[in-house]
Image: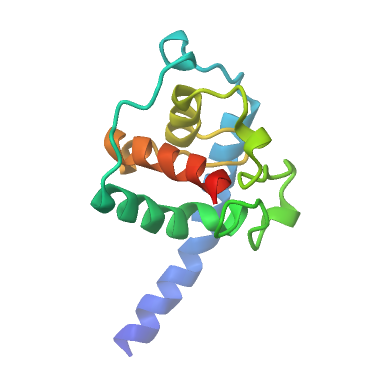
Length: 139
């Protein structure tokens, strides 16, 4: 009985939460996107470690692969429903001319339909994610 009541409450609140989340993403997508000058040419300051890369792979699996694909090819489960086409990170040209700092900023702040990691991830975790994204084209 208690489970049923809890489920009913969750089902009742979920649509409101989804609506708020979509409004929030839409507002962020409308804002002008500018990477701060101090990150534009920045090189990744974090040396990758096995533990750091394992954590980045786990984060990728939870948060990124649904759009960007498990191997970064841009063919995740919902990529075809996105307004913005996904880049194929297995192609070295996809990130050509983009600094590590720019990638860091996009992961941290989000861009367009991509939600931000924000404060959920520590800076070192985001830098490890940058290394992971770059590694997709090296296989």
